[in-house]
Image (cartoon, rainbow, N blue to C red; front, top):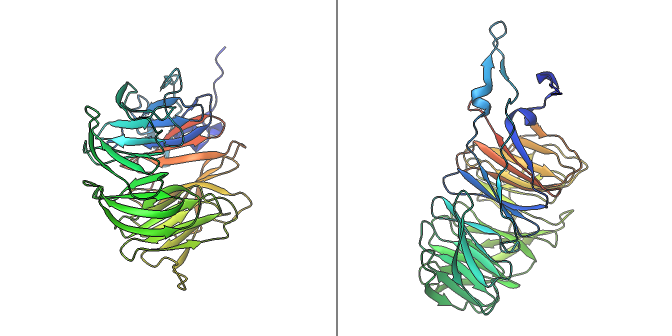
Length: 378
């Protein structure tokens, strides 16, 4: 017998999101450049590929009630197709997945000895054998200019087409994190105690800065001035790239797993506290200067595990250790609940490039895509 659930009992998340149980913790989410596909990194080394195209998109299920003018969304009528999931472990979780050209992705094999690429729908092809030392970090340059591979203290740019080594360099320290600048002209490298900035074409070193901390994530500010490292030792690493100086914001209640920049609001936001932590650009706390802090969302009793700034609006998605996901307007206390806290910690959030879709991953193995109708944020 089919059990019909009344629309009144369905939450907003039930109506606008698609969810799948992938059987292993979600470690990371990555949209491709055109926003049509999401690569999901699972804790057991498998990859899943979610498609944003939806035969029953929320927009197509909306209607306006004639008597009240209120917009409603009817429930789905068809079962969800399962996403493509690799049968065996294919990727190294620590190095993650990077976007490649417009549609694809690049990643390292589980043993770190090979570089692979994947299409938007999950077809995988080996690019190059990169040994003997294992891959410790990976990033990509815009279009098909190259895959940047770190193997300890050796950096190599590899052709994504035929696996040729285009250029190599030794920055003078081990590299565990890589990040390409927004314009694709520079590569930031972090290893214990050091941050280096290299020219993306030649890998010639432009600057080197001593930097403390246990960096788990490295991001550039939109203007290319700041590098921010989220640190497992409950801190944020700030690097003023032109000045070649570094400082740390310490004493977070929990490890800082991720930080992000809102281009629209001009703000740095970070996880690791009991509310979203943030400061206005370019006035970040540095040295003796306290910066300009902002308040976003309401303080609570649960740690913010992850954040993701909307690419075009002054909004921030917030994921909590109890499974709650909210949307907040940056700099405001008001927030909207998207997903109820069900005890399954949120481990990853990512917006599509156009801001229409929000990908959500959890420690329990749930991957979800929430699709927002055009009129929702007006």
